[in-house]
Image (tube, helix red, strand yellow):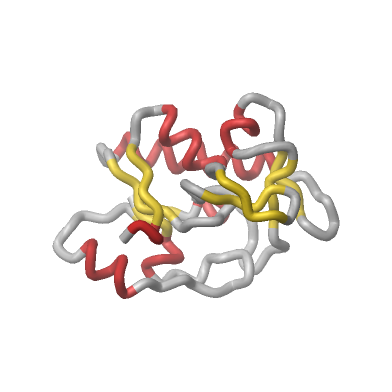
Amino acid sequence: MVSACLLGEACRYDGRSQRSERVLAALEGKAVVPICPEVASGLPIPRPPVDLRGGTGVDVWAGQARAVEREARTDHTEDFQRGAQLALEAARRFDVTVALLKEKSPSCGSQRVYESGVLRSGEGITTALLRSEDITVVSDEEL
C-alpha cells in the first residue's frame, strides 16, 4: 500500500502531489495499492490543513486527541478515522503487509506529525491503525 500522493496523484490538502521518483523506483515491478485516507473519507481537494491536537494518531484512537483544522479549528477526527478504516479494509482486501506512507501527514506520518502546529515525534491516524493490525508502515523518507 502506498500513499497516492507519492505516486503522483494530486490529492494533498493543497491540491498538489508529492510524486517521488525514489518511491517509484523502489516500487518498480511490485503490486501497489494506492491510498489517500483523507480523500477516501470524502474530504475535498484542496482542503484546509489539519494538525493533530492533544497527541498523536495512537492518542486519537484512545479518544485523547483530535484532528483539527489549523485556522478554523473545525474538528475532522471522524473523517480521518473513517479514512483510516477504509485504508485498513483495502489492506485486508489485497493482503497488504507493508505500507509506504507520506511522512508528516496527520494520516500517514510514521515517525513525525504536526501536533498543534509543531513537528513532533509520533504517527498519524492511519499509521496507528495499520500498525495496530500488524501491518508494517515505512516512511517515504526512509528510502
